[in-house]
Amino acid sequence: MGNPRTDLSEKQLSMRQHSAPERREHSGGFTLIELMLAVAIIGIMSSLAIPNYVGFLEKARMAKTVAEMNGIAKQIQLYSVAEGQYPDSLGQIGLDNLRDQWGNPYQYLRINCMTQLSGMRDNIDPSHTGSEGLVLPVSVVFSPITAHVSLAVNVGNLQGRMYLVAQGGNGNGGGGNGNGGCGSGQPRKDHFLHPINSDFDLYSMGKDGDSVAPLTAQKSRDDIIRANDGGYYGVASNF
Image (cartoon, rainbow, N blue to C red; front, side, top):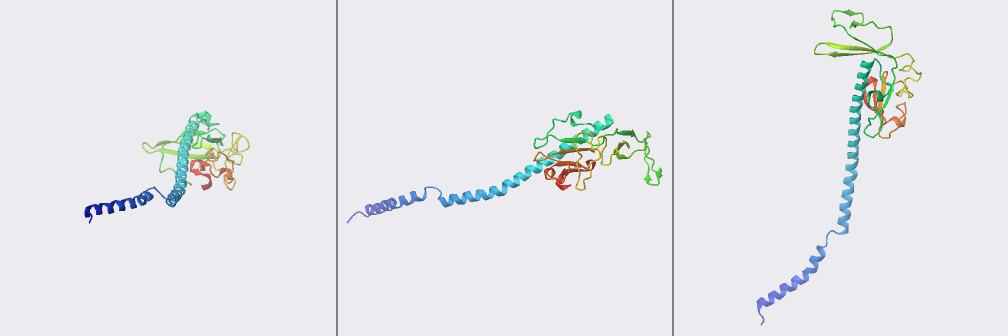
């Protein structure tokens, strides 16, 4: 009769040797099906995340472009106050090398080709009213012209400026050369073919880097525009 301990050790050794190939078989890594499932899941997640990320980048570029255009417009207005007229090009205010978020130069066209008239206003007299309401007298006399009027008031000491800007008389929002602008370009126009500005056009050609005067054209739909004399900044397709 054999030793019980010896018989038990031989049985345990036999069981270990029999199960070793099975452990090696299952420890070889992922199966083909598992790898295919992992790749499919990664692909689905990428298809959802990438478009959202690209859309976020485009919105950020548009917002940055609008902010830069606001800054350019302020520089143009400051130039017009100092010189009595709008600049003929962005080069006159040192911004001709500025690029939008897609690497394209900003587009500018001077529409108002007349000399800008401006004068300090007198103090407001609330009791001085006319048939059309409150009258704001100014300290200079203007010739009878059609004018675009804007009033800026400093709330601190109630002193400010009123600017009267002649619109011109060529019938399409500008003056000077018969095409509505002082340069070689055409003013931007809405779907009624009316100019969208009376002072100057300022816009980015957008992602495609191309544009034409009508906002309804396909090339212009992604443009970032200034319209309503600065009352609107945004995508041309939303105007």
